[in-house]
Image 1: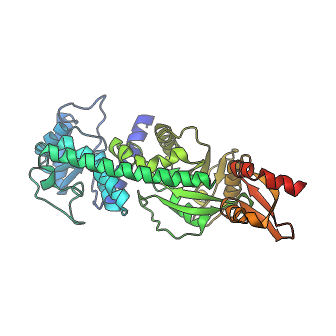
Image 2: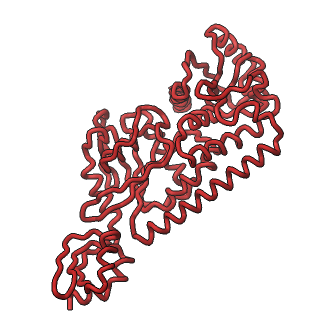
Image 3: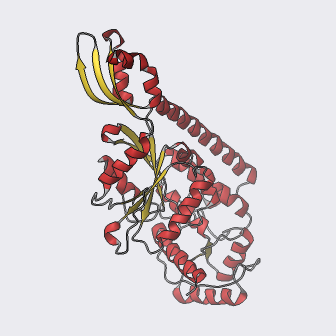
Amino acid sequence: MDAAERSGEVSMDELWRLAETAGAEPVCTVLQTRDKPDPHSFLGPGKVHELKEAVENEGCDLVIFDNDLTPSQARVLEEAMGVRVLDRTGLILDIFAQRARTREGKLQVELAQYRYLLPRLTGMWTHLKRQAGTSAPIGTRGPGETQLETDRRHIRRRIQKLAEELEQVRRVRGTQRRQRERNAVPVVALVGYTNAGKSTLLNTLTGDNIHTGDRLFDTLDTTTRRLDLGEGGQALLSDTVGFIRKLPTELVDAFKATLEELTYADLLLHVIDISDPDWETQVRVVEDLIVRLGAGQTPCLKVYNKCDNYFGRLPAGEDEICVCARTGEGTGALLYAVGRKLAGDLARVALTIPYDHAALVERLRREANILDLQYTDEGARVLAVVRPALRESLRAYEEAAHG
């Protein structure tokens, strides 16, 4: 089997899992190898006939394509098959519509759905009645068929309104980010392929108990928790939506309010499921998306997860850590590596802070790691690990301590 065939089979296996995640019961796959898709029907005439026979024999009511279809190709295929046709982007959008829980997540998914569906309004799925709720067929959740058949101007206005609301979300995030910068709290972002174990790792590192599950896109809404780095102080650890090959452009654009956090992180932890036979391809997919999102220059540690299920030679590079997030194995070494990466110009300083400047002690509690605190006649004597910006504002007290 050549590389192209292997890649095609892996992608189809992933599509099967995506369909199951969405709630479908896949029954068969049909593969076609062509130099380029048929512009009219995507598949060649013979393969269309073969697929139609498979639909009839299996009693299918939905055909899912692993590639994106043009609106006209989707209509031609639906007419030929007599059932609904959905492409990979439509399937992923449907999964996201099921998983979004926060207001921000729902806004982002709805915006992506409208942008995807707008060019597909004309004559698309006209045989369907309006369906809503969790029992709606795969690919029809969200705005709804009846609403999508209203005039395009209304939908464009809705897209504009959603974009404005998400821009407000970005402004709020910007305010929060500036506050973190003033407080000198470093940010560590978990990134990785979907189902690599990011949420499990966050739970293990922070002692939290956020929901995890062995399914694709189990985490959609961003979660941030405090991470204790020992002498290195504290950081904020953020979980992000998992990446996947052929991630829809509509989703990347709609989720910029969330994903742009990667560009402001001080460190990325690229979580890799090394037990997956296709992990090397998944690494390339994630790295390409990191660059696409503008975070290609952010320091990064590769965290190889599920090492207990891997029987080959484990990676052992300077910025490579092997862990089992489920059991906690290797997480001590990971925390040490994170602290080392974030340390930069961190310094241990001895300070004497007069009692009439006691507010500085509270600032140190918030922004530094206090190793020792004693109250003397001269004031509070503090031994702390501080970041450069904070140290600069405390120079006078540091000099007094050494004087």
